[in-house]
Length: 225
Image (cartoon, rainbow, N blue to C red; front, side, top):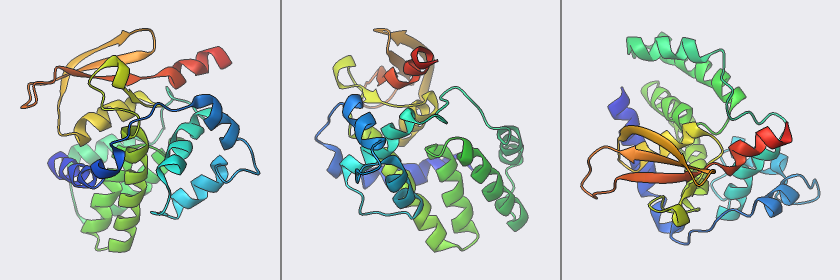
């Protein structure tokens, strides 16, 4: 099943590269201001409603405000976990693809997404399940939502140097981005420059040893507490 999921992610990534060449670090001060201003068109609730409706017309700025704006909400918990995760792991471990299992997969992933709506992996599982069940509109909508998240992250850098690092709001998104780019995690992770995660990569044709991820927003939760 994992090979299928990875293939789906790579297919989605292929459609995002053209619009993400102009890398730009997120302006967290501006994003917080706009995301919490109910009069702004970039207010989080307005963008999240469009996200849930799978609005593919969202601009890259709106996608960035949606993703990073979530980290300024009270419910943002980058180190938390869902009670449904164990149930999901059991489903994935069995690897069954019958109708009952696929419907259960959709139910459980929905619970996980209630805890953190920007998990690309959960969207990936749902794309697969919907397609297997013949629910193509629902599958397409999930692809749009996943692409919105991916675009927001990939717009921030290429990850190859500390200066061009990717910005993320959870460590889970780090590993998802590695998969999306067609790499495999090399098994080592370390914190550099206090706010960057460096994840090594398995041997690859690009000879890239690892990728950098800025985790400023994760550490901000300690200060806010």
